[in-house]
Image (cartoon, rainbow over all chains, first blue to last red; front, side):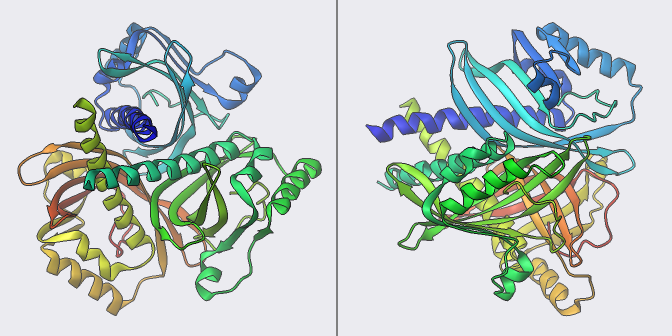
Length: 163
Length: 163
Length: 163
């Protein structure tokens, strides 16, 4: 009985990690048009520094309210095309299911992103935590909220691709 | 039958990885007062370079024998407060259960730690292996031994926060 | 019934990740003589830049066709010994089982490798994707194909140890 319960925990953990995995590959493979589909319609996506997050300051580097804004962001990025080409490589780990707050599963995880520029230069572009609320939509896990908390206050102005 | 056995393996792997995850978040979230609770009373925590470890030299950068020394370490860190503020971000992977030596599960894993300074500067602070002995205490996995083997011999003198 | 199916998925995912884990430790622990055993006899191992891979250019930085070439590579590396000593630390994540193409499981994953030189200098040496075909040989998963796609076009000439 205990094992059966633990089994369902394993399956849930696996499904959450699969979502993280697909999200990472979507961005790293430059399939950005598919990125908004990881979110529900009335979702929130924010990128904020750890410092501002801890001070309770709402100022984010990126603030998207609703899936429409996510799509707009990708359209703008593809059209403007004024940035130097670069790619990301996400590593996500320490995926911790905190609990269920009624509106979805709250999940915390760690990430690092290595950025590679067109000339081949590689660097640690960002690291920090994802604070997520994840909900089941017809058998598929999606983000109703994804807060990206950056450890560093020194953020490259070149943040066009979502993290 | 084989599947049932493999299922218990999955559960054990999941519990070990959950321990690693909680340990990482504890430190990265600066909840250092909770850190000693990942260890049993008569535990060993050591940080040592790969070079010294391979030469069999016992000299560690940090050596804590017993949970009391872990608590003292955190107290000292909080009181002295003479170091430049910084945070860690742990990535842990390749978690490999080697076997059970009677005193607990021996587990090897890989880690990297990105350090972010108060001014926002990020760098790979440390990478290496955890060589652990993990034991069950009333249904909770705890470390009876955690050896942190650093790949680099060039260790920042600024190692106050545990890895 | 659904849970049983999902259970077998969990076991398969676990076995794949265990393979990735053992591969990483084998290289990082400098047990390079064991490295060819992760491949079947008529396997392919290639290291190629993302740019060339996307352009469909076959030119690889490393090309090994068959397990014999993998063994030769390690023998040469051990004998020549003309490179500056260094070690790798692999982090592998986002392990995604794409499907079964009849010849084996196709699996994509992300990796980063931190390289530590003998003087202690650490740096992000490589990051990118593994594109694998994995097959079952008498109950053990092995690579029939491992393509290492490097994000950066700027590849250190000092690539002697396999990735």
